Image 1 (cartoon, rainbow, N blue to C red):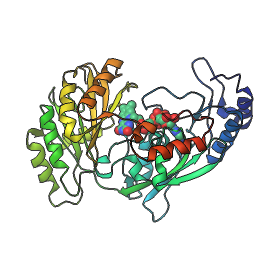
Image 2: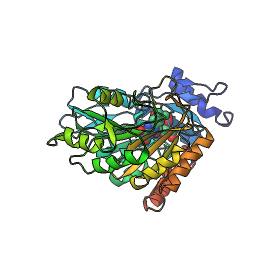
Image 3: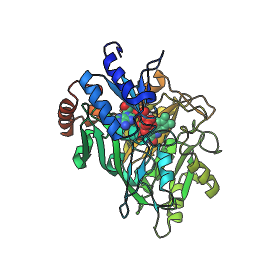
Image 4: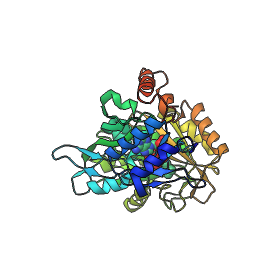
Length: 397
Ligand SMILES: Cc1cc2nc3c(=O)[nH]c(=O)nc-3n(C[C@H](O)[C@H](O)[C@H](O)COP(=O)(O)OP(=O)(O)OC[C@H]3O[C@@H](n4cnc5c(N)ncnc54)[C@H](O)[C@@H]3O)c2cc1C
C-alpha cells in the first residue's frame, strides 16, 4: 500500500483507535483492531472517504497471499450469545472455532460444522471462504448452516444478509463487506462416538465410504487421511477412514463395523478415539504448515484421484472430508515420510490440482470463480459494484 497517499486516513484512524492502531513496520502492513461493529463502521467510513484499502484478517490459515491494505484484525471481537429457546448462536468474527465450541459446552447444543483448522481459524475467516469440515457429512457446507451474516460496507453502512443473499458474503473472501456478526445454526449436543478403520489401498478405502453414506441417520462426520499423514499408530502405508457413529440408529456399531470390516481392519474403540482426537492434525501439529492445496472431487472420482496421488505419496499427504452432497474436499500438505505434515511446494500443489482435474473435480474456488455457470455469479458481481465501487476491499476474484 502506498502509505503516503493514504496518510490522512491513517492519521485519522490513529487518532480514533489510539493504541489499537499499529503503524506499518518493515515487512508488516499497518494494522488496526476494532472492538465492536460500531468501530468497524467508523473505520469503514474513514476508509471509504479516503479510498484506503482494507484487508480483513482472521488467523491467516487460508491459502494464498494476504490481501493488501490496512490489516483489520478481530482479536477483540469474540463475543458469543445464545438466544434463549433458539437453536442458534450469535457470534462476532474473531473467535476461533474451538473456542466457540467450548463456549457452547453445557448449553446442550454444539456446532454443526467446523473446519479442521478449528484450533486457530476464526469464524469470520471461514465464513469469508466457506468450506467443508467436521460435521459436513450430515450438515453439508458452512453456508448451509448460517442463518444470517451482518457486514459493514465501505462507507460504513451496516447490512444483515440472510437466505439466498448469503451468497453475496459467504465465500466472497471478504471482498463484499467486513463480517462483524453472524448467526449460526446449532445441533443438539450428541455424544459423538468415533469409529476408525485402516485400509491398504485407495479403492478399499472408497468402497465403504459409499456404503456408509447409505446409513440412516447419517454419520455426523466422515473423513480420511492418506498413508503419509500419521493420524495413529496404524501400520505404515495405511489409509485411515474415521467418523462418528450415527446417533439414534438401532444397532449402529454393528452396521458401521460390518461395512468397514469389508476390505479394512476395524480399529479398537480406544484407537478410534485417538484418531478422532487427531482430527485437527495437521492444524494442531507443532509446526503447522501454511502452504497447502485445496481441491474438490466427486466421490465417484475419489478412488481415481487418490490413486493418482499415490505416485506422489512421498510428496503429498492428504486429509479428506466427505460432504452430504457427495463431494470430497482434499487438503494436500507436504509429506517427507515422517508422518508430520509439511508446507506443500508448487510442484506438490500442481500434483493435487491435476489429480483432482483428471478425476472429474478441480480446485476449491472462492469468490466469483465458485459461481461459474450459476445465476448467483451476476448477483455477486452487481453487489460488489454497488457496495464497493472503489474496490476498497480488493477485487472479487
Ligand atoms: C491445517 C489446516 C486445516 C484446514 N482445514 C480446513 C477445513 O477443514 N475446511 C476448509 O474449508 N478449510 C480448511 N482450511 C483452510 C482455512 O483454515 C479456512 O478457510 C479458514 O477457516 C480460514 O480462517 P482464518 O481465520 O484463518 O482466515 P484468514 O486466513 O485470516 O482469512 C481468510 C479470508 O477471510 C477474510 N476474512 C477474515 N476475517 C474476515 C472478516 N471478519 N470479514 C470479512 N472477511 C474476513 C480474509 O480477508 C481472507 O480473504 C484449513 C487450513 C489449514 C492450514
